[in-house]
Image 1 (spheres, rainbow, N blue to C red):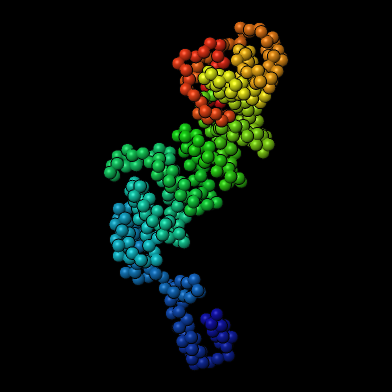
Image 2: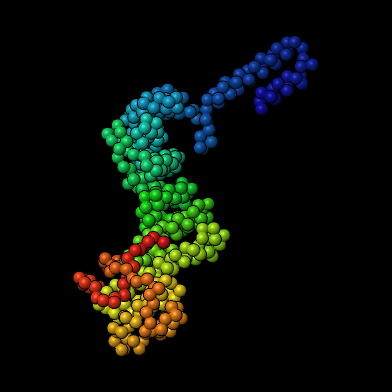
Length: 408
């Protein structure tokens, strides 16, 4: 502003001044502009600090820590990762408490990563995020860790003594993906880490952990663009975790509830994936589970407990195939019950007539015979009870479930 005003003054007074006056005025203007020119030159190398003060840049001195670290950054940018690593490694040894240490750790990790040693780079990134959580490169270090963990989760092997990629890195991938979600909750990076972890379990066929991971994703990120995928994968994981009638059926109950929830929240997606067909398969699998346990109790000489499971079966799953099989054999089991228990039983004769078209004393050859005795007791029962070891020879005319259990 001072320079502009002086020039304006010269232009205004020039027509009315003699030559000597112009010379004097010109010297005055030059004298006023001289300090301004030097100040403007000085301001070209100054930087505005956080408290609005002009300060010289930290790397103005070639011997300063910032200037030396800048040389390492330039080496890495030129593609000389080995020289960059040596420079920043020496820098960290010379300036262990410098405010730029977090940047130096990130740079050394990047140099190791550029040389193909991502596992050692994780140590520098981990030290940065543990000690310098307030640094402006904190999120950058977590992004580097996520990239390495994602590569490990998708099959990249660790180097064996820095040579061949031979060592499995699944544990490192899981640990890093979990830590990212803990350190940056609610962020987009944590969302990506959560989905990558769930997909990792799903690919590895660890269906129980996959179901838990997808369930946590749905709870933590209900507005995510990938929540539909998480809901479907959760249902598939729960269904596939059921191994058959001799095993725990809690996954089936949870899958049925999730499918009904999906039909209520997103009926179009539910129709597209065939939710009705899946519910039918789950319905039949749950019924087969009860029939299996009823057969087990009858097989071990406990017809009262066996009838209790059949009672639940015909009440909850009256349209299932397992109910038809149970009604075919119920007269044999009913005859072995005490009179007090028979008085409390449902009207099995009426159910046989309605569902099978058979009288109480009739035998139907069209209904296939049941399979061989089960190999072991169910891992978890619908009703509590202590199971005794099975006899060596099965009793005649027993009520036995089929042993072939498929995954719904």
